[in-house]
Amino acid sequence: MIVLLFVIALLAFSLSTVSGGGAGLIVMPVLGMLLAPEQIPAALSLGTAVSSATRIATFFRAINWRVVCYFVPASLPGAWLGVWMLSLMQPVYLDLLLGLFLLGNLPLLLRRKKPGTATPPQTAENTVAPPAVSMRFLPVIGLLAGFISGFTGAVGLLFNAFYHRLGLRKEAIIATRAANDILLHLTKIGLYAAYGLLNQQVLLAGAVVALAGVAATLLVRFWLHLVNEEVFRSIGHAAACAAGAAMLVMAGQQVIRQDHVHTTLNATHSVVSASMGWRTHIYSVAFEPNREIELKHTHPAFNTGRVPGQRGYWYRASVLHVSMKRGIYITRGLSHTIKT
Image (cartoon, rainbow, N blue to C red):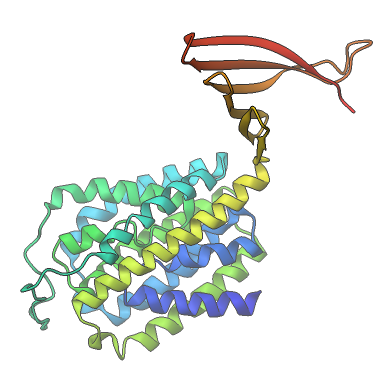
């Protein structure tokens, strides 16, 4: 698994260098096989911090320090809030939302470029184009990036569109992102240690990710100039979609496992019903033969195991009826299930 982690991290950081970010989101599913969910952000931060330092040293002259000054001060309190939230709860449902957000890059990936538009040639003097958005939004972006990064360990490609809309070219995006992230990751590492989220296994995984990140940056620097701006953005959108799909699969499996999610489908000659269980709740829909739809929610009311002569649970059910004959109405009741 350590070798697999290194190979995936090397490919992810190589792709990240030519897409402006996203390595952490791609590595997360592999780290999920090695670490507990609450330890993944700490390992990612260790590896990404070292990778960011390498990118700063490699592309130092392309850093836009004005963006850094607007971004970093707001990202640090956001990171503290995210790490504090991580110490209280698992980030699995946020991962689901982030996965859906990243899949929103699919239309951008499939969108065709309008005829007659061309990307301006990049030169040493053309690392920054006229900004399309105001700098005053950067503190808000920094706060959100810090919170999500502290809670999940990676922000990756979530805010890449804002860097593009600021008019930054590829080297400037890579360097400025690294400068924004380095202090953020170092702050998070200190917070993870303070909350007891660092151990020997996390340090080992973080070291493997860091080594892969350094190797990827040193390899890619020699051919990054061959990638034009349009391809750079397309690779970024593709990486975002791949990371989003991976996050959805990983988080979905974790939700199914920890929250006991299950589904059933029953069909007879008169009734068709489907139900989904989540934790102790059951949500179901049934199509009755008398042109009526029933939406039902059931959950345990109390355990009768300690009551003499009774076994099992009493369940409280609420049913919303939508009928062509009787209109819309609600019924409630209790049902008893024998415990075997």
